[in-house]
Amino acid sequence: MNDSRLPSAYLRPGTSSFSDFLAEQAPDLLPGTRAVPQGNAGDLAPHGTTIVAATFPGGVVLAGDRRATMGNIIAQRDIQKVFPADEFSAVGIAGTAGLAIEMVRLFQVELEHYEKIEGSTLSMDGKANRLSALIRGNLAMAMQGLSVVPLFAGYDVRADQGRIFSYDVTGGRYEETAFHSVGSGSLFARGSLKKLYRDDLDATSCVEVVVQALYDAADDDSATGGPDLTRRIFPVVQVITAEGGHRMPDDEVAAIADRVINARMARPDGPTAPLTGGDRA
Amino acid sequence: MSTPFYVSPEQLMKDRADFARKGIARGRSVVAVQYADGVLFVSENPSQALHKVSEIYDRIAFAAVGRYNEFENLRIAGVRLADMRGYSYDRRDVTGRGLANAYAQTLGTIFSSGGEKPYEVEIFVAEVGDSAEGDQLFRLTYDGQVADEHGFAVMGGQVEQVATALESTFTERAPLADALAGAVSALGQGEAGQRIIPTRDLEVAVLDRTRTQTRKFVRLTPARLDALLGERGPATPGERTSGDGRREGGGSSVPLVDDPADPTDQVSGSVAPLEDPTSGEPPIAPPT
Image (cartoon, rainbow over all chains, first blue to last red; front, top):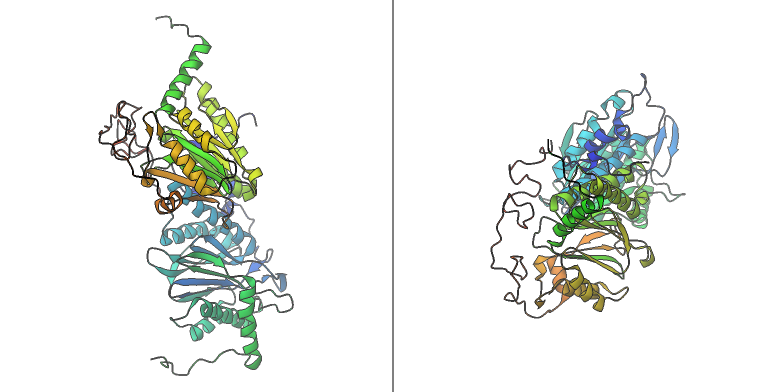
């Protein structure tokens, strides 16, 4: 500590990206740069599972169950897998929980850092591309079983609508329309969303749709946690509109989950969809 | 080979200090006031894009006067330092004191090293606490000195006049509207008496501990300023002192010219802030 002067690299004009700066100054802090010995490390660490997202006119909802698993063991019952990325976006993560949470932390700083340095926020596509770059940096780890697959959702202030982006392990970025899900229970969740989703939902009924989807995922996928009635643990739900994003308070999510469960008491498979559709036309 | 003149170290330091002080005194003042819910920054700054007051971290803000490129560099370094520390430790481990120390060491080293031109800047670093007792306001000068300020502080040109005016109206833990009115009227204090600064020429920001978000820094928009300041009487554009060519009133008719060869002029013309004014070369590679 004989020289506490700011290092000259800090004073050099240049990048507005925090992860680029980190790569230059402290590469050991980047999630994807560590050398992992050969072999599959996938069973060593907890895995997060199902994330679902759906848009409604004026916003988007992102929700995740609360279970993390390690093989056949439930590693954690109340893990948080949906995080606000900035005021108008949120990211939900499936895959290796430790790496994923670190990546989310880096992504949050990345967006805030850009905003502070440039004095303006990144565009929705800009944010999605930055996340893409972070995932790509993790490819070596993904090859050894430590993959991270996020779902990114946010309100695009310029386009005035909610948008959803999905990713693959190589950093491929795909925009989804209406709804999407990732993680081990995603197939069941997506089937449920297909039947329940419609494009004239309001925020509360959209949350109800995603809670139904998570219930269906938990119903058929052992790695996805359903609503935990004895411990009162319910999904984390992030609602983002033109006014910004907020995590829906637990008691509101609990009320919706209780309603869903009560209806399932009568019909365990959930609400029925009309056979031919077109009933609203 | 000619023998260099002997310059005593005292004289050398005094010359450097005078040089820096002159550069700082040329700009307009920035005022920081501690009010009931945090810290308020007010400055007269007609530019909407080039800020004198900015956010560094959740509870920390930065204000500066002097040469734009120099304090902008320090601001970016501060953001990087804070984000780096917050990322590798925790958000709560980023403190205003730590940042003020880093700035002080940097400015001090640059000031006393012969090879570098001293920075012509003066800086406030403010941190807002959970209660008014936890609020901190540091003033850093061009030579790396740090002062812990209480209540209010002024830097830039016309410090004495503004400080005297502010002292007469300042009350501890005043509500935002009162603190703002006092600061704005103090900034309007000039040799030719009181003038009304139009709200579009004011740059105002607060660190507000009552905000629910973790980031406590917020800029006040002209609409919000109008509501807070209320009716302030007619703006008097005719009332200005333009003897030294400095723009005093709301709409000065004295055209200020940009002279690229003069590093001390106040107008950057069409040259971007960090551009080299003589060569016109952009200083940064575009982000990839």
